[in-house]
Image (cartoon, rainbow, N blue to C red):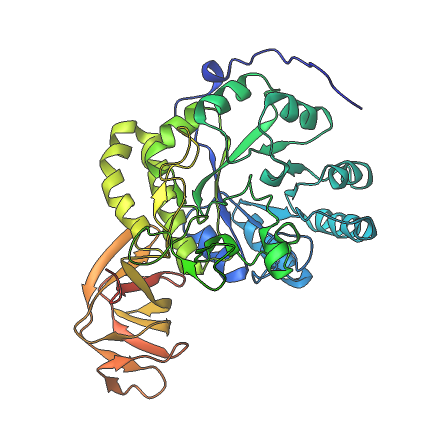
Length: 426
């Protein structure tokens, strides 16, 4: 079925939307630990993959047993789980994809994220009850495409990352009101059109559209002249090297009112390869910002400086606003990661002023650490460290996975985090 020139009546989006209505905050769940962090720190929904059919083959992902547990946990908290089935499948994979989608729907997933048009049409026939979200990999840039997907039964479209806010607002006005719009607001960006890239395939044999991208766009490159083989000429950018293709990370925390005003129903955080600490930090910052915005914009604006500092405490490339306000500035050249603080430990329990911790990175008696919890961050000085098994007092601990106890003046809970100064941060 081909739709040509279809026109949907413009919707009264601004008139009908309540001023305090917030978009969904959608968080990445590369595995169960990240899922728990996302839920604890305020995500309304999470997205994750099985061990097949998703575009993050090297994330932890979910087995069928883990998916069942994840769905139970998510739904117990009144949240949603969207399953990523956005691989570009071959003919011989379609039947297995349909079977997986059927089983996932029967288990209770709240929707499936699909990029391939053939997979979409096949799933509409074979699993008609499954709600379909059209992936950003489908590169939806205009209202005709979004209207086509709506006509064919999709519930939501994840817009291409190359759209400006102005164009998103115009697109929203031309599509059915029950067709939701989702857009990325934070995390890694791709140098190719919404992730449709062949660079990894050609250089490493690992297919970016098959979930195995080696991220060669992040590598350091130099020029070589045809008649001078073996002579490599760097294209100077800074002292760290040349990263011509490496995109900056997206950060739209300071623009949430504009995103809401444009009619975006779901704000998506990238990062299914990220740690639980990253998920907690970023989701927590966006959750607090959205809750402040629900009160009024002045409360949100007052909180922004603190929350922008929060986002510096998780590993990230330099930030910009992507394509939301025109072409990205800078367009590329993001060299490496930085973070002002590092993940020290996860809280496993707290009682009578003493916290039991699962160690991630070294810290010392005398260090000033921060407790990261859904309410915010709270600094304190480490006065004592005890090994959990022997109760021996030590001056420092450094073995990842070790369990220790420290006095903690705040009533922490399981799933909170401790972080400390990043001694390598410039």
